[in-house]
Image 1: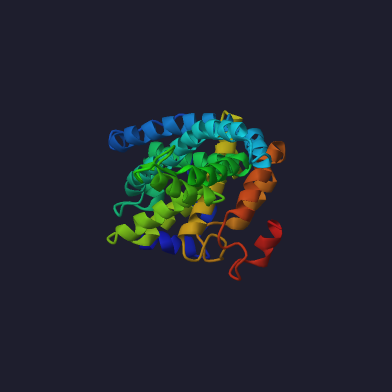
Image 2 (image 1 turned 90 degrees about the vertical axis):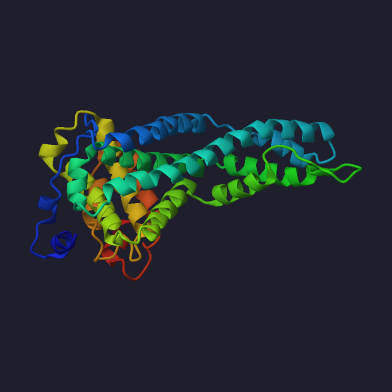
Length: 329
């Protein structure tokens, strides 16, 4: 790992040559040594796609809630709103429970990709199927949080549910509480989850930080080097004409860009200095420049640039070069 750090910090080293690694996201298959972790993570990823499909269809109960709020004395409207919002909150509970599933399984991937026996580059070259799975988790996180941020009815539905649940917690004549809906303790946890602008990113960054803190025998650089190497490899795969020509599907190109941004954001939340400082292992200027060059995917790329602007942690700090702030201004 010391050798890798020397390479990353050397002014004489050609960084992009070092990151000339083609990861075959379209065709890679797990090796025998990857299979045990791969199979467990694939179950999670299959569920992740179902979660996204359902979240895209989430329409909420804005109208009936508005009617109930505007007519507080109309018991029929109150009951209708409560009846309509309960299954929606059960759906939100499933999304929250999936975040707990990710929280359990992400450390399996980190443990496999950040061990001490290989450098970050060696891990990612030799464990491409696991690299792809980690990339797919990042892709899911970005998509989920984007859908959540652009659909305010999610937070409105849950806020109304919480207020109404508190009012409806009745006490019978023998003082026994009558429970309704999602248990109060779980609702409290869900409230903390959905209060975040980017709840899945918060879960992923907390999980990664916890992984680092729990593995005292594993230098923190192993994890952060793995993340920075992922970001740089994804960037170089699109910048390098030879590599880019080997990508047959335009969606794979967008996938590389989303993963690059996702890793940058995660690195910025996990690393104490962040992704934007000059000492970072990530070439931020080249990464932003690459995004801005993707004119054919303007809408999607603008969303990724906004993710860098608004969901990172260290962008506005003094350690961030002015030129990088101007590029994202």
